[in-house]
Image 1: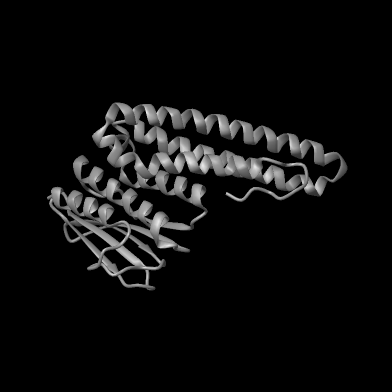
Image 2: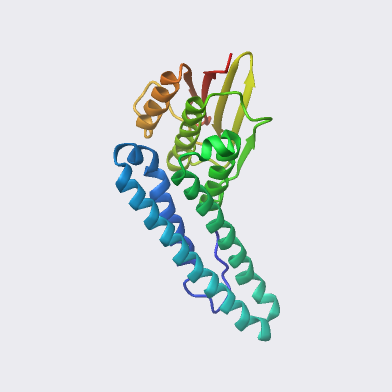
Length: 238
């Protein structure tokens, strides 16, 4: 999120940065941490929930007060802090929605894989300003364990993009056909040599294990300078 650069709004950028840092810390580490330490992960999630609330409320208040100060002497200048308030509100809402989903065990069963991925993509886009397109014609015919596997693979792949790819665009595609369901995450980032050691290889190992445990496979296509596509394919319901 980009804070407005108008006079009289000190601290806006700091609040945006703080919100991104705290939520990134939680969501970058959540899947593996929650698996190993469920109760500590719950405590971390609740702490992040409080941080999002406090930082967003503080930032919204600051932006609104800045706009009120400017509107009388320079109405045009008040637009930037009002835009900041709207952006911060949207970011906080997306982060809260993603967090609530993670804390609710039946969210995936209740809302479906497509909606779950949409929520996480919205949060990542708001947090990092990275354009992420999402194509999913329909909710796939999969059992809940398979949906959980694809959801975790998708989130891990997206976090790898954010942390390592230096991408400008990302495309996420959920497709079904020929008795299979596939989820692909493609970016236009720096790429890597799949056979060599590279940052994020542990995440790819985790994704591969999830796919194989669900009876499927993970394919990684990448070359240095040519971006990366990670595709998980699982068998659909017979």
